[in-house]
Image (cartoon, rainbow, N blue to C red; front, side, top):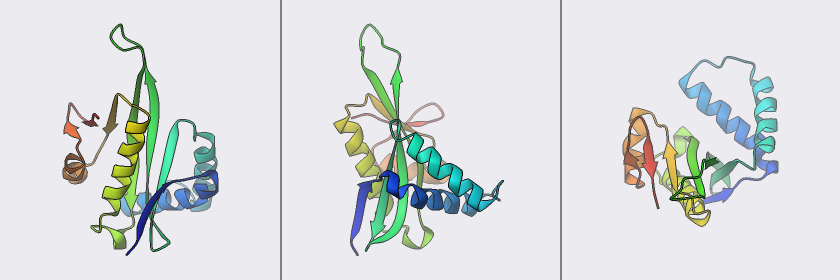
Length: 150
């Protein structure tokens, strides 16, 4: 099994939209038509590439999962004028490829990007079920969130 994780490009936007739809379908009854959502999400992805960095995972060339690193600038403080942070969003691995290390590779890639960008911290808002996964990845529990610091 060959797992690769890469930064997604505008060309990948439709695939990201399909993964996002699949993730929503697993947990909730979708509130809108699939094709409408796919079109909106594809456009949103392309429009937000400066602040929302998408990553795709593939297993043996097959789409396996995704995640996003949302970038934000916090207000400067007298102690730190450059307070860039990140937030991990929409982590998803297709059910048949879970528990094979794909999610770990996605998170490792996102955190490597955070280090490269010298982010002050990275947060994730997680379901209770996924908290142990993020703790293993180096996040620490905080007030209503998990946070990772380099």
